[in-house]
Image (cartoon, rainbow, N blue to C red; front, top):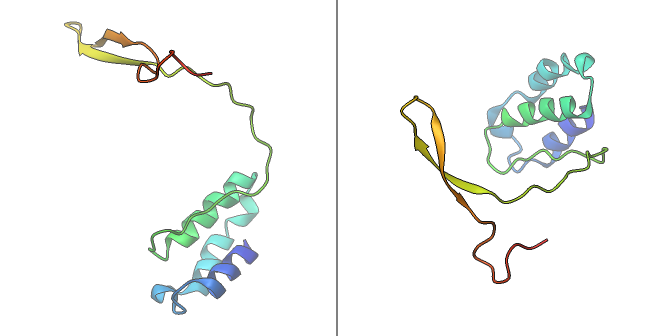
Length: 106
């Protein structure tokens, strides 16, 4: 957290950090660091502290971490219709990738 806080302080386009008391932000969010249990937790905290600047295009990207292998799903689509029961029913199922010639890509 310390390095991320410092990098934003030193490299943010507005040296006055939009009037935000950056030292106070470090203290506020730094108090939560002892409760971090996963890399995603620190990413969330850092996103919150950077959000205090109320600036667009300030993104937080996780570093190298193990990723769960994903299984690609189908590109399914349907139209839903209101059912008298108060629920929805599938009114129409679309075939996959019907905009390509030769059918679905793999």
